[in-house]
Length: 113
Length: 114
Image (cartoon, rainbow over all chains, first blue to last red; front, side, top):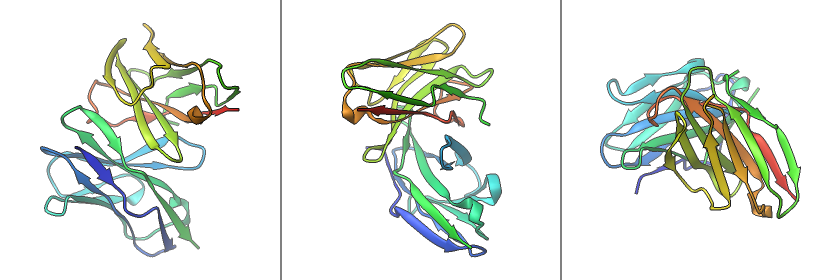
């Protein structure tokens, strides 16, 4: 079965430090992978996606994600965290069999000043 | 602003009642998706419509139904409501029919069943 896992419920990081939000996936075939962010009282916003090509994908707000096929991971990264990055982050994978988007359980990122 | 409009923002109702949630997709988008977000279940895909036709079905209960109208807006109908239906319901839209595209989400409708 296709699935996506976000092993950390919460990640805490100091402003200015690098951040990583982890995501691993399980799909048959080539994965379509996504990151979305949800700010309080808002809908999800698209950050970036990987379909094919360069393993390092750059997205919105200075975020990037690294696709690692051997580790079946798609971790979200940012070199220098901002307090305004505090939000709920969702990893998602497109199920190639059913063509549905499966979301992880989300990771709350808290950036402290 | 994503361009996706959901109404109402908040809805409080009682068990056994029926409610209708409305979604207007981004201009030009033909696909509408409905998701349910709850603390215990996370973000669950309910159903997708593309250009008026049902295209994909997820974990949607039989008490729930949806449709997409000729002007492309969509409505999600929830009936015989139970306490466990309390959740945030999101609508999203995309240009084409495939889940490989970027989705634009509305701000959601917070449903509270008392």
